Image (cartoon, rainbow, N blue to C red; front, side, top):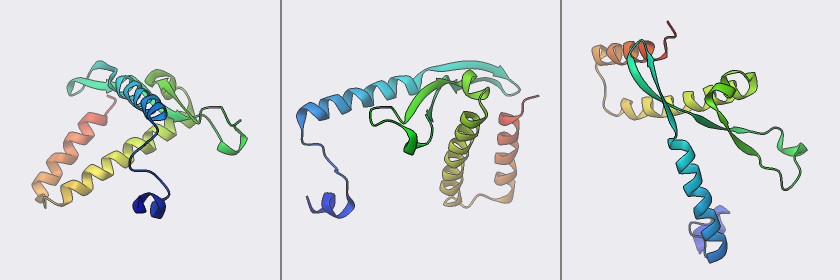
Length: 126
């Protein structure tokens, strides 16, 4: 396909064996990403992800067959400075994407203040 050649990646995987494997990996990721804990905090009961995908290290030092990402529990991530920083950066990027979407709706100053109040309440550890 022209698009594939122009962009260096495939929109559709034509190899059935590889496609089947990739789809099973996709299903496993979806399953792991839906595992959650229910935590009671300042805003009430909230659902948080139980597992996060984090990088295993510098790609240049990894062997060819070593995974470049692994899933670690949220508890383990909070205890590892590198993983914690990576997950915070990932979550921040997601929040900024949502904020960009909200810009489209031209929130009033009052709506913006209410949103920020809710975010502050949600991330508060007190």
